[in-house]
Amino acid sequence: MRDQLTDKHLAKHIASNFRTADIDDVTKTILEFAVKVTEAAHTVTPEDLEQLRGHGFTDEALFAIVEVVGFFSYVNRIADAFGIELDDFLEQRWTSEPE
Image (cartoon, rainbow, N blue to C red; front, side, top):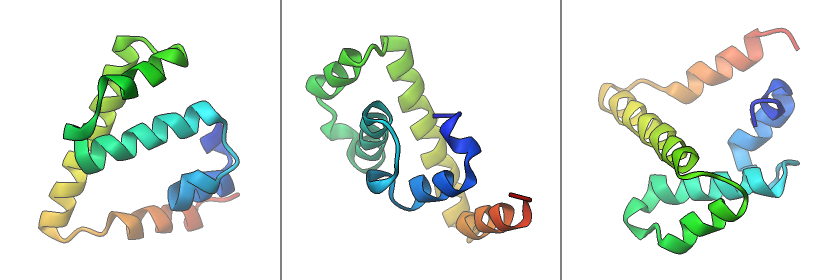
């Protein structure tokens, strides 16, 4: 996914709606899982994990995915509590960097 994010237009599309972005199915599967962990981690099932393992992910990789999702959820909660608009910060960064 890191390679895909070097394309700023694709990165914006992924950020706005990854489901319609021009990315591979494995990346979409990871992102769907990330959404599920973010919105309702208690609903993650063994089948969800097996689906990712079926794409070649190890338990260590699955842990890393959940860890990153958890970190971003943590940062977003802090930002929300202090009224920091991360989307504005990111939008400014995208528009101020040369293409």
